Length: 202
Image (cartoon, rainbow, N blue to C red; front, side, top):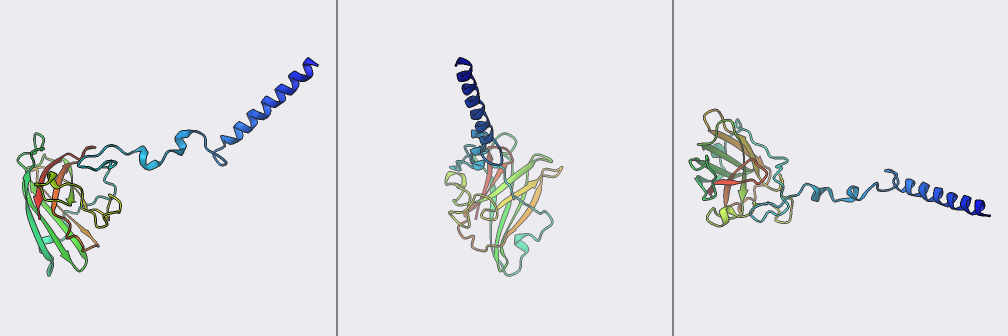
């Protein structure tokens, strides 16, 4: 009798083990809790300037030093601003100067930055912002659709690299001309925190 009961118990345990093994099949189920995590939250970090969740990966950021600058587009509605260092500017960025141009035209919005006083051969990032420089250093990024994503093409991100002299010129065009809400453009270090160091009002 004992042998028969032991055999029944072993059979039950074997069946349970097979069922659990089947649940772990990657085609029919989930292997572990990590696989159920939202992929958008796995890489998110606490951002800056109220950008909670913005990881500053800048996917989709572009910049072309050879594109037609915003200030050379005929018939465009052109605004420009002068870059000035922010109080938050870290060492090595306090002397940055330059000009930013924003042109609204039939093909969209073109933004050009022309900067000097940068670290030679260093990579940087720039964004259109929704507030003037004096208001929280430009506040949040400008979005064409306020409820849309925080990446291009809903935002304007300009990636650029300084040359050996510490100067850089870069241009980006977005197909959307409705950029009246862009009040400034901010220069950031290309780091995980997106440290702001200079701003220009439009």
